[in-house]
Every structure is written in structure tokens, then in C-alpha cells.
Image 1 (cartoon, rainbow over the protein chains, first blue to last red):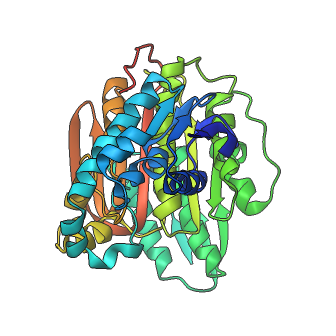
Image 2: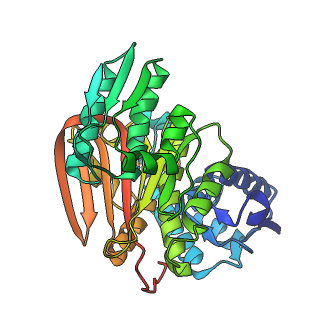
Image 3: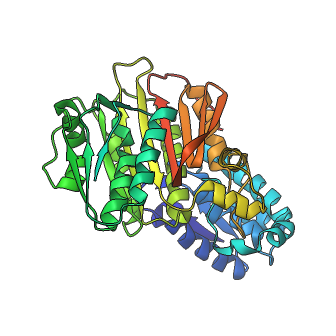
Length: 120
Length: 284
């Protein structure tokens, strides 16, 4: 089990930086690739945003190597506030919907590899 | 060239239209000097320095010299307190006795992540004259602002994100206006490219605001603003989005959209938060 202490990657108790989220994602992916389970430890994190959670967690559901069940079983969270937990669940649901339509979406939007976010 | 500013510039459709008109004039100026004449200006909502800063920055990047003239002393005082004039004229910052300004920030993509976080904390949370907000209200306001920053910074393809705010303690509800502007690709282009459609700017903004809709590929997105709307509604606040020639306003559960006569190449987002709010939020 790899424990990812989110606070150790950040400069404050706010989980808002996409750059830092990417660093976490790399470490999480590495752990999963080593057949380890991952636990995100949110101790001392007072605030998070979905843009951050999409990167560290939502994207995992897009890894073709792992099924939805595998991610559900091997990725856990601890010490989250209720609001962050609610957001994590929103991000999970949104990712599942997104990735279930991904092939169709990709075919429609081939040019978009370098595109920016339409959700502002 | 002289550009006369109108007598009232505030966070509403007319105010943004005025600023977009000025932007479109400046887009075509590639050299020389521009004099922004403030003679007629009776009221300029200071958070809109974020938009005005964007205009000035565009000119400066083309090596056009910018001058501000005939600004009344009250406005000059505010723009010295919020750091706008200091940013461009290198004058000393004035002390904000009443603590109602939220400083102008031109955030470069090269600035470390902490710059934005520290700015928000210092300007919105540690301000001693701001009303004491509940932890929940504070969290929700910060979430809203950071969601928008994250999108602009990660995907905006722009060099600078401009932001500025103003608190109005004597108005009912004690509103705090906070404006974030980026010159990245606008929503109309992104959505139409993604969907292969030819929707107008307002339709594109509405599409982008639907939960889960995103033009990103290979990773999910599209949640941030849907959560913002829930909060804005409960807080009785307001959000305005201007992108390309689309104007979109949401407050008290009512959406108003309008196609403007001028275009903005990026996106402007203005929040009005009601700080006189003791409600408890479910944080969902």
C-alpha cells in the first residue's frame, strides 16, 4: 500500500494547483503499475477543487490497463472532510460518464489533443 | 490617440460593453501612444481593473505607450490602493485604511503556484476589515475562485491572468466583486471546435456550463462551474461571463444572455459574493 500524503506535495493546505496534482498523479500511477494499492491521505487539507481531484483521481479511470472495479478496490481516501469527500464522489461519477463515452468523443473531436477546457 | 472612457463603468452588461469597445479599438493600435482620458468617469468599479489591465497589457506588449489622464482624485486614490496604477506607473502603493480593495494581480504563467494562493489568502481571507465569514462560506468562495483560476491557468493558453476585486461594505448584502480575466482561446471557439457546430457565443457559454460538459480530451472535466452555480444561488450572489461576444449573467436563479456588439478574445468572469451571509452550506 502506498500512502500519498497530499499535503506533502503542496505549499499550503489548499489542494488547488494543477501542476502539483500532476506530480501526485505520476506517483499514483507508478504505485498502481507496481501492483500496489493507493491511499490518498488528506490530513491537513482544508480545501480542494474538482480541477485538482480530476487530475489525481478522475484520470485514473481512464487508464485502459485498469478496470473501474480495480480502481474502486485499490484506490482509497482517508482523513477527508465531508465536502472533499462529496467532491471526490462527484469526480468519480463524472469520470465514469466521461470515459464511458470516450471513444465516441475522441472520434468526434480528433483535433482536441491540445485543446483547452470548454468549461471555462 | 485619445480614448475617452464613459461616465459609469460597473459590473453589468453596459459596463462590459464599454470595456469591450475600448478593447476592440486598442486591438487595432500597434504603435505610438494611447491616452486614456478619464474626464467623464464618475464611477469605475475597481474590480474591473482586471479587464482594464488586460487592455493595457495588450497595448504594452505591442510597445504602445499608455497614459491615464484627468482621473478624479477619488478614483485615483482607489487605483493607488488596489495596486493598479502602481503596476503600470511604478508609483508607491497607497495604504488602504478601510481595507475595501482587493489588489490587482497580473499573474504570469511563469509565476509559482504559491503566488496565486498567497494572493487569495492575503486579499480575501486575512483582510482585517472584511466581515468575519463562516468557515463554510470562506471555503465555498475560495473553491469558486480557484476552480476558475485552475481552468484559466492550466488550459487558457494565455501568458497572464488578470484579477482584481472590490468590497462594498455599505451596500446591502455587503457584496464583494471579484473579476478574473484571461486572453486564452474563448469559449465560443472551443465549444464550436469541439462539437463541430456553429453556435453563437451565448449558446456556447450555456453548453460549457452544463455539468460534465468539457472540450477536454483524454481526461474528464466540467464539474467546477456546476458546483459554483449551486453556491451562487444559495448565497444570492451573481456570476457574469463574457466570452467572445457573449454576455451571460446568473443570479437569483435567473439566467440572462445577450450577444454584444463587440468581441473579447478571451474570457471574463465576474463573481459577486454576498458576504453578509450567515447561512450554513451543505458543501455538496
